[in-house]
Length: 348
Ligand SMILES: [Mn+2]
Image (cartoon, rainbow, N blue to C red; front, side, top):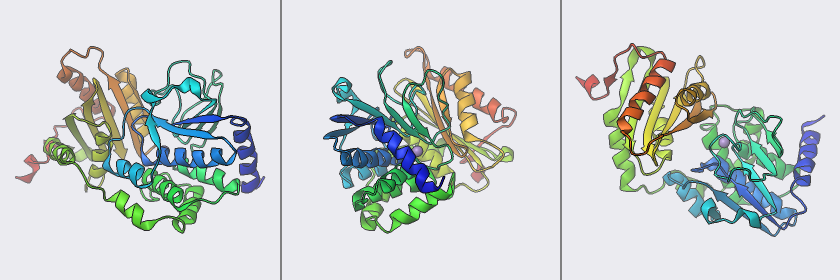
């Protein structure tokens, strides 16, 4: 089977699970990132082309990161928080860039889902009733959706191309992590279609003062475990959970560090992100093991992963839960015997 035949067959199957329908709801993961927003926008384009009138994009949580807010505003992506949506009004439900039941999609328990498109290492089981295309080999869901759109013979308007390109770009760290030949192929294809001026505006957005407060906190709290090449920082109470991903990304640039963990309190949970630049370690496994020990949710890719741990008693001492969390990841990373230095101490 050629690549084209493969995608034609996949597209036909996908279509069969969606049409006929008058209305389709596309759900991204909570606190959406560029990849899931772009994949949703692409699916909206595709599903519209099948004659479906209403195609609404929705998400749980909110959009924290300034780049992602700029993306929604500048590309005019019409999104509505899931709490404002009556899901029963939609004929079909599509989930993009995540897998139901992993704790990252805000849908009511027992909600019927028709289609799931994802590239995370999630495993459907015998209970799985929906149609899925899970491509663990791809660096982004945007790549998969771009392939579908092109296979359908549709034109990709500049606004959509910009979204999909940015989705691939961010999920693969500019074609440097988790890249498959198809990611590269779509990245190159989309490059000629995007609005470069808009993209640069999205990538350098205006930032609120909170961003700089978080940055200050992140630097002040930064602990370095030199011999293990690990850095850790705790942001305290944060006003948007994607801050932990943002700071973890930023710390990835640090010389001499290969593993970064960042945590913060949000909504009576510890949110955390893990980044790994060393092929001997796997961020997804680390995030999953932390979650497992702490009865939370976690997982992801080899180089970037995340999780959250609900605090059982919201009135209890947050510090106690944090100590437990920190002990868990220190044990998992085998750095519990190493005395860390803060970045400020290291100066003198
Ligand atoms: Mn993704």
